[in-house]
Length: 89
Image 1 (tube, rainbow, N blue to C red):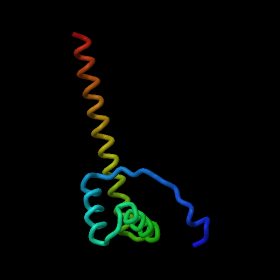
Image 2: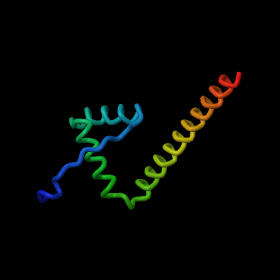
Image 3: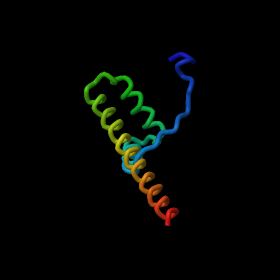
């Protein structure tokens, strides 16, 4: 690898509690920090992005995020409606 390919960029990724725990356990099994293990898994996923299983994993994450945002929106709208009912009384 040349110097340009070794430049690093820090990003923040939100994981579920279960994903974080799975990373921690696997990291302990392979004697690697969660950060380095995450980097290895990202590299593997990127190298195999055309693999149908990787594409399916991407689709599952997309759908889970859509569902999470839908639930959040519904909860916010319900809270607004309840607050409006209180204000009207």
